[in-house]
Length: 469
Ligand SMILES: C[S@@+](CC[C@H](N)C(=O)[O-])C[C@H]1O[C@@H](n2cnc3c(N)ncnc32)[C@H](O)[C@@H]1O
Figure 1 (cartoon, rainbow, N blue to C red):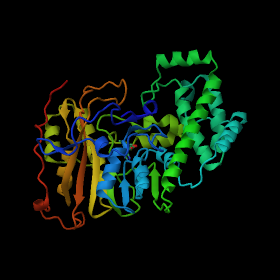
Figure 2 (spheres, rainbow, N blue to C red; figure 1 turned 135 degrees about the horizontal axis):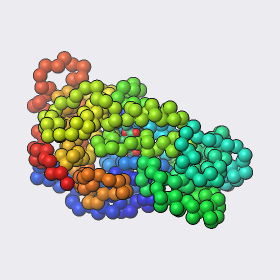
Figure 3 (cartoon, protein in one colour; figure 1 turned 45 degrees about the vertical axis):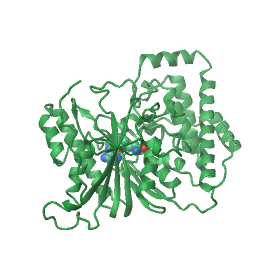
Figure 4 (cartoon, rainbow, N blue to C red; figure 1 turned 45 degrees about the horizontal axis):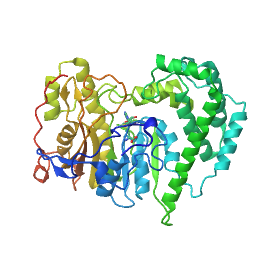
């Protein structure tokens, strides 16, 4: 199963994983082994329809989201995703005739969603797109991003052309066609910069400097224009496929997708009561989403101040304002000797739990919370995130229902990124918690809650060890 958009994507999943285990095979410790790709055979391309329009670090594969939607929600339900990223949950919810509330710290969400969940009913015209591209090439507008370092990332002649194209497109109000070209310009602006293409984080490299230097001796302008045009055309065709798909049964498609990028999910007011939560929290290991996407944000017109303010709120880089305590987490804390890593651990669980809890409090009784997490290792110690979340939430009015384990054969996460445990996360887990009929978050607390109703937790695989690699 190949991801045809591999070049442009950094998904959580390897692209060359063949299912190794039969679906729903119970593993020895009671965790259900699954292959989401096998469970959802109707999706055989992770970038189908509009899913691949934006490259975003650590995207969900749509199969997981589709599985959770089909299993834990029904038509017309509202689903909340407090870590929406590039909006995979929004696209899948819409395609399955559900509604979604998407929240994320990253402002990119606001630019991505109108394209990825395109509500138009008419097929878009290639001629109109070509006309706008021609106008852009002829224009004399200029836009310089509010980014003090911009000249560090571009050859001057390339920066000039990009500034002209962005100048035109940022001031053009031709709705969907301008949005399509913007999505192409984002990719081109990265490809024609000095930053490495395959790493999400900005990284100027000798290899890329040499590549750009060689390009400048060729017909680079033609190549740049060609890339803008072909990417724009591809997106337009993806959108047309989306229109055909969503109109195919001729029924009125009433699904709504509300989105708010640029918010901290720990304390933003969730705008409505929802029927389910489906989400994938940030990584415990450093993954700076804002920093990774800041080149895009600057070209889209955001300022350095805005970007810096958001970076400060990013999990797990802010200081913890409370210490989350559970049996498993306390054991990890005990073994962890490095103070900086303990701080990161505390920050991660404090703010991840705060954000989850903020959205989970807005769920109806009996609603499912489907949380997709890894099993990372930190300084050689395995951190069973799903188990820690189970321990925390079962004490607060939630029932542990299930955890699915999807094994990862190979890992192509962040290219050449250095990591003490490059092989540390061999599985990913979809944890299902069920909100109890009586909302215990508002009920008086009187000792352990509803313990009888809970499914017993499988025993830890082994206590956190320190098999440093
Ligand atoms: C694993 S990614 C989610 C990817 C998403 N599932 C997708 O398919 O694109 C985690 C997300 O958490 C977001 N995030 C980090 N800290 C946050 C915070 N304090 N509030 C809201 N979102 C936050 C990051 O911006 C990132 O988009």
